[in-house]
Length: 373
Ligand code: NDP
Ligand code: GDR
Image 1: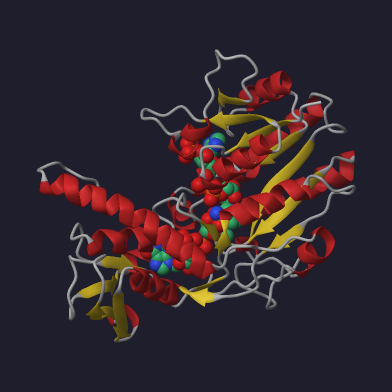
Image 2: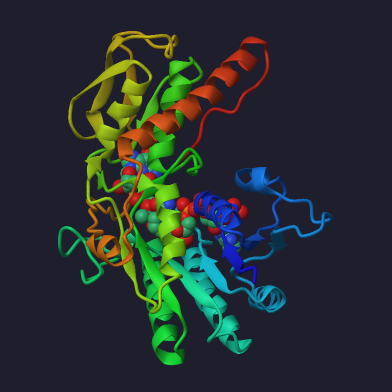
């Protein structure tokens, strides 16, 4: 029997990699996409299947996590074996600007899905994965963070995700549902949204290298994160739903670096040696030397990185470091891609785009460059 999965957030970074993985495994994959005035399916266009062909295994449904009747209807039509709840307003800084919306989508949206599964009598047959987050640890109470570390959320996003975490546990305990939380640390890829820090850096520096931008404006570059590759992490999301008993797991690499280090590596991938000087908001990143042919727009002495306090958060999560021992021991999971390999992949992809844009610009066309975030 072909297994059926429903993915909320299928148009996002993780949704797209997970859909690829499940299609490879022979699943019929259903996804919820939001109506938008422009196309928003770029990350899944390469796996799109024309609904007019026989046996199409990839299907998109219009919907929204704020809309109970819509979720209930989709669930009743699809009757999935597995639900992956990846949909969210996932940007921590934006959650301070839109706290109520974030709570509605990320917190109550999870309840809506769980309750719809129960209401439809599918609580014993449909397995549920909740995209929980290392942001739950916020102001960290123990290092490294593991499944037993107390939570201390530090943003409206993290508080909403705290509700989602516990309501998932509650439905497991109250109704015997197979429902589990993956507590995932930061994971990135060339498909990462442009306003998250790694992608902002790789895209911004690639644009600077090609003469499309002059300077990267950053927030707190002392911040420490445990970064992995999204491909490795979606594999674990699937594994978590294949166990005999539903359990919650921390997914991380166990290695931590600063945002400043990620900037330095990204620059090095472009042949740019950067040196940081100054402190606080006066810190700058200056070019020491340039080698190779990837950065014709840059010369020694250029200031490529400056601090802009607008990117500071009202309450910051300064440091996160996960302990994936339990996932490794119980599920045999190992991340396969290092953060340095991931950085190289992201820079290479963004450089391709920047080169294309530089060519277009040279021929008088407008190109998109700046991104806030
Ligand atoms: P993205 O921001 O790339 O994707 C979020 C997805 O959610 C998009 O498909 C988006 O749709 C959709 N979405 C947003 N609002 C709604 C809504 N109201 N109703 C339905 N769908 C909605 O996130 P990631 O792929 O990086 O992350 C996936 C999940 O994992 C998220 O829940 C995130 O919070 C969580 N997470 C992510 C981590 C990471 O490091 N990436 C770490 C830990 C947890 P659209 O494309 O239309 O905007
Ligand atoms: P995070 O990711 O908040 O950890 O949430 P993000 O990449 O946005 O920030 C990581 C760290 O970098 C610092 N930072 C900046 N961040 C952004 N976006 N822009 C900047 O200019 C900048 N300068 C410094 C931040 O302050 C922060 O400390 C991500 C999301 O994917 C969540 O959905 C997910 O739950 C967590 O990871 C785990």
